[in-house]
Image (cartoon, rainbow, N blue to C red):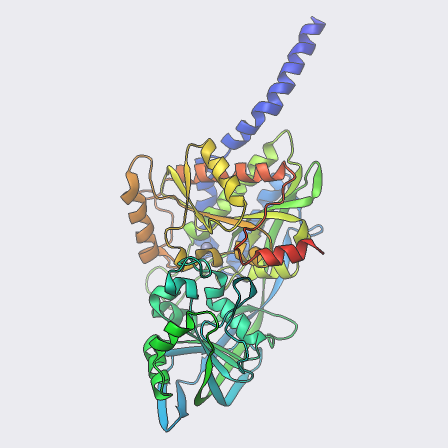
Length: 546
Ligand SMILES: [Zn+2]
């Protein structure tokens, strides 16, 4: 009898350690995901704007869930990391006048140019500054490319083309060909122009190269914005940051005696030299600003063997709040963007907390704040990390995931960036699914959500999106729903939970996949690397050598 009981105990213990993983995987279920999504995207949560009643409700809900799962607060004894913010509204002159070589060109604000200043001062004035064309405005040592070599842009307005030479030439040996690199993003171009000492920077818009129409630029650069309240009051940025539309840029170049399209043709070739257009302009911006606060939310499950090495799951809790000027529905519920992502992370957290055999490395669950205003919560964390960046093995971001049912495939944004691709492929194989790259890499989605703040400081990061092939309804079904979302619901009050269109079983399967990816990362000694061509490789190498 004694032996029998002992035998039974041994059998049960063995069964626990082997089968409990599947039990944890299967604990990720549709009903719970739906419960989180419905609550977070309900009108009660008021669109989850930073510094609002909606924030209060959201972060306390997350705290409550993390506590319930037995996860520890990550920031000392708090689940919150406070972020000092500034709300800023730039009012640019209604016209920008460019003069020189006997010519005069007027640009109308909002339709032909946009300009903002992140400097925390009431008035920013640039007078009689030269206009300089700097090609793509890129300095990329790994591609042996420097658009600013021997070019004087100090205290001047610099004009640069959006995207990168790889996109325009489709030459896969130039940068990453058609796929956008970080060097192609306006954000990078602003940072580089500031490093070069330019007083103002204007990116030339073209719909294909930017990945969105001028309307997105107009809306994005003419309203109130949040920015981090940095100690230097943002004086490390150029005083003025903006865009020119393509037609007006052609006019400006023509006034200076150049053909913009011909110059762009030449700028695609390594060694191109930009030039001073021989034109001048002045611009005044008045800034209204006030301080504000928001909170990142972080919980940690301590690793059993390497507690000082970290795997991050991240997704933004915030959305766009309420717009009282709208007729009808005024609440931006952000159900897919990103209540669904947060729900997915909570389910992963629950699955990890259920494991009998705890992961060897620590797992951090990070609900980021102020993503919609320019990835500010994650940027704040990257600048003020709670856990050392060079002890952070990898990050997995979930933003606006699949809500339309099970797919036989999965889209990996930034496919080819790092060795993390292999982890995703292995987990997908276990589900008999295939992994493919983003069909529109020229749109630069890899640079447009929170994992990017981690990539910039060197941490390898992945970002999955919905697959395209529904297991029952085929390819067009999902693609049509995704297009419908982009056109009618993305950043609109109608981003809500739809009983008829939504089928969260797809998110269950994708969430299980990401749980497996994190679990594998947490139980080995690998430090996945960026690939040779990745623009983030240098940052990681520098960080790890510290
Ligand atoms: Zn989002």
